[in-house]
Image (tube, rainbow over all chains, first blue to last red; front, side, top):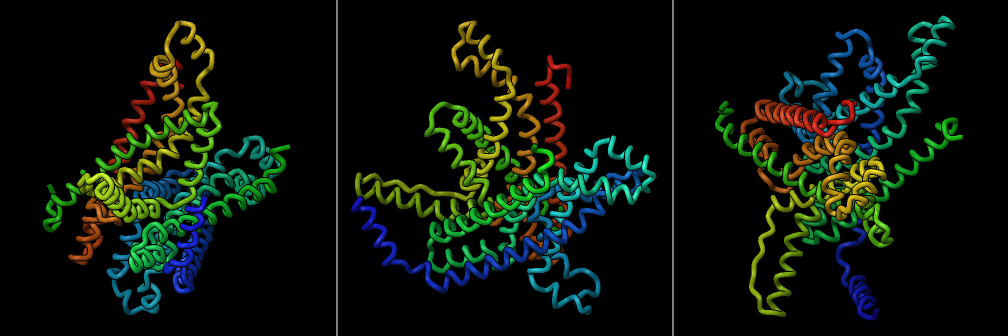
Length: 240
Length: 233
């Protein structure tokens, strides 16, 4: 016991790593990661709703292109998608002359675009599954009321589909948080980027990476509890 | 083979690394998954707890962070052990902690946690009467596992297993970050050198889709094999 407390005191006294400076880097990383994940999830969600409706269309020429998109984005590593957008954006003709260039030149926006397209693909498939699982009786009832296709989608299918999709979507959010770690590969200072920086500066891999792992773990649990709470609220009618 | 400005052979080599890495990690993940599932279903409180902590921790932390922890920390850890052996016992060994081993260990370790959940559900889906019947025939528990539990469990585990494999395959791309020359790293290097990212990155993306399609076919065959006697449902 004595040994451990001595070791702990030693650790505190010899603590050169967790100074205000490095904690500042981690804080910056936390902000970048949160922005990146939050913005891409919102944008992905907005994209995924119409895509999922198109994907569950009866017409092949509408649903097939969407299927192709989700197949490619779910079948290839996010890292490849990020590289293609990060290295490829320069080669769009005339992009360097447009007002978009100062924005796209930074690593943040290519990463944001890659993450958005990736999460939109996964979310589309989650929503499609939920839309397909709508009870036939509900659709028949809506038709019997004389609802148009779009009104039925808005009032009957989508509200219940969103609720059914909630548990799977919660997993997707956690997946996105973890996937965002690769933003550090394209020089972004996200949480993982901060850990790599601290590691490189002090050559202390255990401290640098274990600390960041603990932060990710806390974030994961926060998301998990948030979605559990949402499920409890929104799916209450299914539990009782 | 397509030349791709001289990078063709290296890309192909990289693809070999990707496949090797994926298959070896899958084997490790299956072994760890079976162990985790058994631990979770055992009566021992300690084993249960250990397995729960393992799966919770692994699933709460990004793959890349775990990989960097093991890769950058691994060499220091190994060095510390060999130093200790040298000073205390005068055993002089040098263990080189290479990127490939770090990759296989991390990916196997991560997906062992996911496999554990898959296998646990599948084990529980096997009718208890089957196992009792096996015991009644005087089979040892090892034999019951090999002849009764495992073959019937696989039927339920295969969909989850195939899902995990697809995710694992894509996760192998991350090893390029810690310095392993898989096909992603070769493609990224070539893109930077030639300023033609699409020439290299798109074939690599297609290669991933190809590997995924082939494995989908293999899993469909396996599913058919393990569904024998269940009316193909």
